[in-house]
Image (spheres, one colour):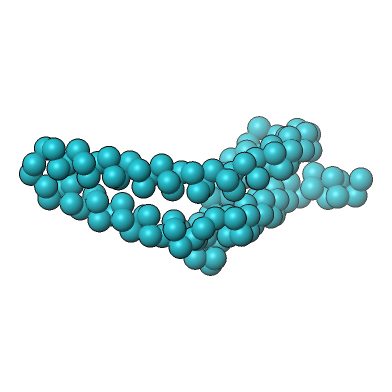
Length: 133
């Protein structure tokens, strides 16, 4: 296959490109599936609750605020779980493909680090670009 040969000929550049494509896919799924308004409201409320907990002296009131904070954290986790379920299988398949393709290249032992670093940088940039929480 011409694509696999091209990937193996330029392993560093190709792993970065693959990482950018996968990060774009994940970001687009998050953008489409997540309820961004609810996520932002919930995160803002969490910030407020954290400030109230720090300022509060009464132990019982701190416990009530902590319980409300946990409720919002669970809600955020529930909202972020749906996109993860959608993207999990495709990402596993891509990583499996990448592992096989890069096993005979110069970066056979370090391709995962190139992928992870490129994915983190790309994800941060795309989340800012799409204004995701």
